[in-house]
Length: 463
Image (cartoon, rainbow, N blue to C red; front, side):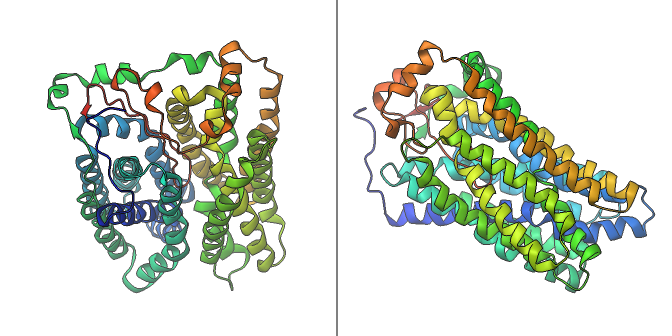
């Protein structure tokens, strides 16, 4: 072990404050994203009143750009963490997110402006704040890193239970413009949380002379794309997620149309609650000997797709509640095995970039899915085709993941499988024996979609 490494107690006042701050960041970022279905209804009405054509697809694109940009920017956020530090990156992210919502509040009649402010800028800010909030945990926790990651990432589920009602109250009481300003005020908490993120080792200032392009080149791992199993997985998962975000955007509007006497916001809450439960249950199951994590993910995708398609068939609202609870459980399982599957396929060395790449690829279908569903609603004035198209890819490409079993393993892949299975569990820091030339990696899961952020500490950090 490096003699210069600072050995700190795991649970101190500072580390607990950091866990709380990270919990708030995760909760605020993803509860806003997951609650967009509520905002969508009001934005849609605003655009329709303004005579905007194809209002549904345009309003849904605003929200889908947010989630797509958040994941697309995750690898860049990791580079910035290495370059300018965790605290600075988080503060900049909070600043961008806050001001993007504030600016959006003045342009609610101009959807093209909202594409940039609410969609792109807020997504960038959310990513820059969110990614470091997970990275900081690896500085203070090793033995209990899995536990604190579970606590922190549960923030998204906890906040998602409440945020739809808070947003709806603000929309009803103050209107869309003022609601966005209140959201901007809440987002300012991200900047306060950033102040708590003090890393345990300092940036090496001499590395500031290294160009960003050089750092980006140093992060590229070509070997993972030579692994046929990973290539299949990284191809099928993004295609399967084409309709993943559609319920988060269109479910409340669907309820307004089909069950006007019921409250659609409760469905978003149901997904959030059951997703958290699903993660807690499926995590230990995936660690059991003989359990295939890819099969678990296949089952999850199939259920998500099937339940999405079943939404349009329900005659009673309580059945829709049951469907969303099942969707949430499957979503929790899907999310919880993302990281471990990456370890299983490419090993510890390539897992960080493997997840970073697949998140970037997933951002594309997750961005285009909701607008296409909105366009279909504009065309047919019905969500029947939209939810059918949204659910079908998850079922088809979930089944096609079976092709990973048809690929013969290479020698280097067999070496990975021969290792102690405990070494491939998510959240274990890479041991010092693998940490050649001072490189350090922190393995982190996302709240909604697992993220492993690779951090090259040589020569960025001195320890």
